[in-house]
Image (cartoon, rainbow, N blue to C red):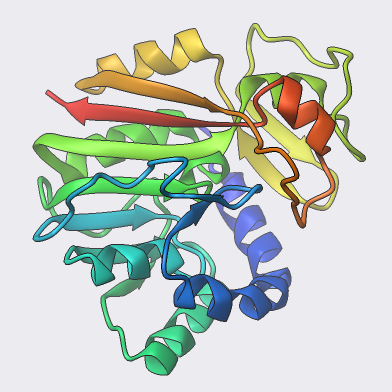
Length: 249
């Protein structure tokens, strides 16, 4: 199985680190988490469990680690994993700025240097959820989780991936096949991975998970995004994002 995407994606995320560094202070300072490209508040899109106090958590593809910061403020013990040295440099700067400290590890989420059964929660807002091969990172998440542990990940929707051109915004025309969907390469923007829902369910079950929920996210009225690959009208009619919830048997 090829792993060339690991180095390619590291270079991509190092190159765009400044853009995310500008947004990191606002994300770290937020009183309430907000999610995805439409920044939907946790109160409207409940991604985090209601009670994470005392949980050992691992964020797979943490970027600037604001999700781990939200977890830490709620009493969890997070560890952030990311493939990009420059993204982690921003995360460390935010830790100093906000005096909120937890481990940050430079690593590929497909091969995490942590012991088996070390976590109660594994989470990815994008991160590993799209930038790592699901046939590698989901088994790795299963290895890290204790029995009963939860896996939560937010990613672009299948519908969006089927209708998004190589450049520009998603439209109403199917541009690629559903069958065989796995690896998508974008010009100068790295390598992503997406699976059809049926294959994702089968993969999760093979890795010892029970799927508890799947939220197909609808953009709120009047929502705005800093990204240009999907418009609000599109995202009001079809889901541009989806959140998966699974529990290790």
